[in-house]
Length: 162
Image (cartoon, rainbow, N blue to C red; front, side, top):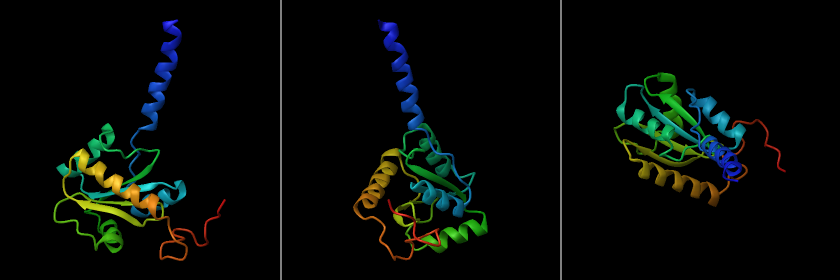
């Protein structure tokens, strides 16, 4: 009898781990926003550099599951601040935020690229998870309004409603 319960328990454990898997980072700004729109997910966009300790620590916490950025709920952008085109696109869209002077610069957006939360500099897992909770709260409280500047982004026509 105990062996018959072991298989479903193992299957459940693998299923839970698969659902909590970190998203594969996208290294292109526009592809990150397009993927979020296509998949109807929030975007966690980190602007940093490959040699940045704070950036790498944040990515390691995501990969280990300490920060609740999961493939089932988020598209993750891992953008290089040293790429002038990437930095320019990011700053044109979110540069009015007060990130401070220390990497990483992070924004959490809805599926249309609308800013829900932002932060700069090093954080522990609890601080990042608080930022995510703030973003999710805003996303749940205020759906995208038709006719706004990002209402149909990246679509040329309004998406079909069901």
